[in-house]
Image (cartoon, rainbow, N blue to C red):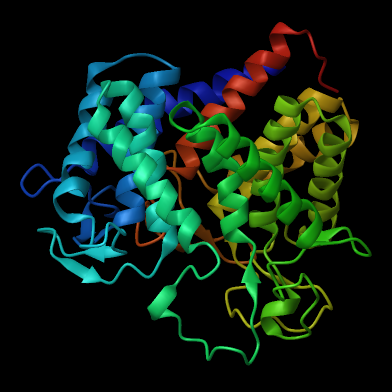
Length: 393
């Protein structure tokens, strides 16, 4: 059974998803990647979003480094990196949010996640290309992220200072993963310190012990804010963070941390699974109040594929049968709703009932990242389980 699952994830990655992006996304005239692709891969908008450019550079660099040194993959990664080097950064070294097709900046560098994914991209590509310039860019950007992290949006924040100060879960969540991505380029002391701080933030500050759930926003001292933002739950963020934490727990040989990450994953699924139509809700309110986000009950691709990773890693390391039972349920829902067997790749946005809401394969928020990363992670985890003869139920 494990081998069959592993083959399914491997084949979809190598024979469907990656070829789709190679065929349709490269802008061979102006550089970089098109991400706004319709169901058949045709370009419907030419704006370029820096974090998606960087994510695709990371994806192809990662596959080159960890799977196979295919020159085609390295060429794609360097094609994207060239565009980022020419057009991606503001004068202070921060990374824009988006550009027009030719590369002229469109939206200011307000979004620190552009910087996070640029760091990941150039860190991974520096290994693949053995290029010191790429390594220096990754290190410099990582340092800027650490300097910005307590005021991520800087002058572009819309909030009035002091009225309801909140800090968001997304940045410490990403830093958990980014620290390991950058480990080969950073001092061990900085890596260890960042990991320690992020684990504390993710697993203590944003964790709400009474419910067993993770809040998306808390006050600066970690208290609960009874507001739209303070009550917000983002199940996908929580579960994605939990597999980052599982990786760190294995690295640190911390069984208690591993078990807590598994428990939070399972508790989040129990709370956020749609009992009537299946799938995981996009947003929820911890008090059960109506969420502010009108798209709260949509079913999104990244939420489900990140959940598959977390459940497989949880089962691999703990053999908790609930992880496998949930994996089979989420796998069944995901594979029967998101992949497109006709034109390839995966749809991203479903309505509550599981019908395709937007027939696109890429856009402003969806690019070549979550699906291929999840396919790779799930395939490798299943292979590892198979080699260790861990039995599936």
